[in-house]
Amino acid sequence: MIEKTIFVTGGVCSSLGKGVAAASLGCLLESSGLRVTLQKIDPYLNVDPGTMNPYQHGEVYVTDDGAETDLDLGYYERFTSAPLSRDNSVTTGRVYQAVIERERHGEYLGQTVQVIPHITNEIKSRILTVARNTDADVQLCEIGGTVGDIESVPFLEAIRQYGQERGRENVIYIHLTLIPYIGVAGEMKTKPTQHSVKELREIGIMPDILLCRTRSPLPKDMKEKIALFCNVAPRAVISAVDIQSTIYEIPSWLRQEGLDRIVVEKLGLKAHEHDWSPWQKIVDTIKSAPRCARIAVIGKYMELQDAYRSLFEAIIHGGIGNDSRVEIVKFDAEDLEQRPAGEILADVDGILVPGGFGMRGIEGKIQAIRYARENRIPFFGICLGLQCCVIEFTRNACGLAGANSTEFDPKTSHPVVSLLAEQRDIVDMGGTLRLGAWPCTVKPSSRAQSAYGQDEIMERHRHRYEVNNAYIEQMQEHGMIVSGICPQGNLVEMVEIPDHPWFVACQFHPEFKSRPRNPHPLFRDFVRAALEYQTRKKK
Image 1: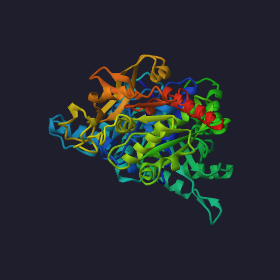
Image 2 (image 1 turned 90 degrees about the horizontal axis):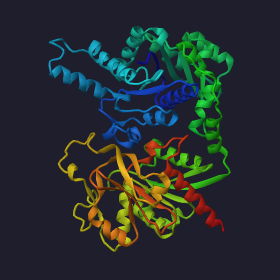
Image 3 (image 1 turned 30 degrees about the horizontal axis):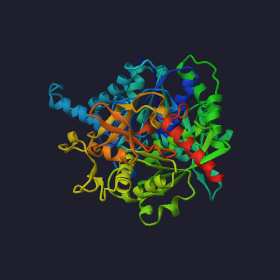
Image 4 (image 1 turned 45 degrees about the horizontal axis):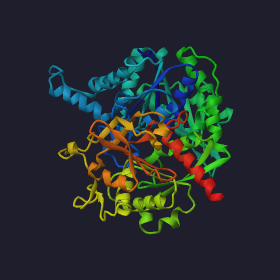
C-alpha cells in the first residue's frame, strides 16, 4: 500500500494547469526511480464527463477499462507510465451516488447521513482504494476546482482529515496559484496568492509548496515575501512560468526550480540521480527539428483547444517519432461546406478527420476526405472520421447515391453506417457507448499491420455506431479493404485504400494510447507519409 501522498490544489482562478503540474511532478519522480500513480477528483455533480459538452469541459478521456474521465488523466498517462483506471477518476456525482445507494440499502443503520463524516469518508475511501491497489511509491491526487468554490469544500475537508490520519510526514500539500502581472503598474502582485493560501489555511490545510503561475521567473525578494506571508520556506516557492513552446518543457522547468528534490526530502523518499537527456531530446525535437509536416485537422469543436487535446498531442508525438516538428492547421468542418476543399487544403501535407457526434459539419468532413482520396494526400480518419470516409467512398467510388449513417439520416437508402444492435434499446446517455479497450485482428500485409508490427492489438473506443457489414463486399470491389476486425461481433475496426500513398481510418481512438516517449504507430506512420508527400511536392 502507498504510504506517501501528494495533494495538489488550485487557487485564485481556474485553468492554471493543475493537471499538467501534477503530471510533470509525476514525470520527475519517475525519472528519479520512483513509481507513481495519479488520481483526479472533480467537484462537479455529473457522474462522469461523458454527457458534457466539449465546449464546457474539453475532451472526454477514456481508460482501458472503459471509464469516461477528465482530460487530465490523459496528461497523467502521457507524462508517466502509470496505468490508470476508473478508480483514478472521482467526481461529486459518483461520491454522492454511492452514499445515497448505501443509505437506501440501510447500510448506515438509521444514522442521519451527513457531509461529515459520510461524504468525506467516501472521498477518503476512494483515495485509499487507489493507494491499496497499486505497487507505486507515491500517489498524486489532484483536487479539481478552485479553493473558495462551495462545491470543493467537502473534498478539501476530506484531504485535511486524510493528512491528519496518515501523518503529516507522509502527506504533502502543493498549492498552485497565480501571480498576476498588472500591465499599467508594470509589476507582479502577490496579494491574490496570499488570500488564496489564507483561505486554504482557514480550512485547516497548511500548504508545503507553492507553485506560482507567472509570466516570468519570480525574483528572490518576491519569493521571500510570498514565503513570509504564506508560511512556507522560500525554496518551496516555485516559479511555474508560462511555457509558450510545448507543455513537455514544463517538467524541465520545474526540475530546474528544484520541485522534485523538495518533494523527495519532505516525504523521506529514496531517489537516485537520473539522466534527463531522453526527455530533453523530446523537447528539442518539438522546438527545433529541421523538418516540419503541415497537418490539417478537420474538426467540429475547433474553438476550444482542449476539445481535441489528446489528438493534438498524438500528432505531435507522431512528429517526434520521425524527428520532425508538426504544424497543426485547424479547420472547422462547416467551412468546407461553404468553400471548395482544394481552396482550403491546398498547402497541407496530411489531412486528419477526428471523432465527434451529431450532424453539424459532416458534409464538410466528407468533402475533405474526398479531396484527400482523389488527390492522393495522406489521410487519417478516427472514429467518426472512419464513418465519414466510408460514407464518402460508398457515395463517390461505389456509386451508392445518398449513402449515409443512420445517425444523420435514419431513412437513408444505403445505411453504410448504422447503430449497433445492442445499442438500439438504450435510453440512458451516460456510460452507454462502446467504451474501453477492445481487441482487433489486423489484416496481414496491410498498412495497419506494417504500422503495428503485430496481428493482434488492443485499442480504446468511444462510439455508438458501426460500419454496416452488408456493404463491405462492395467497398472491397472498388478498392477499400477492411484491415482490422474486432473478433467479438465481427465489427469493422480499420479500413484503408491500398492504392493510395497512405489512406487509413480506424473506429477506435489511438490518440488515447500515444505517448511522447512512445508515439502511437498510426500517428508515427501518418506523419511519415505526410513528410514523404511534402518531399514529392517539392520535386
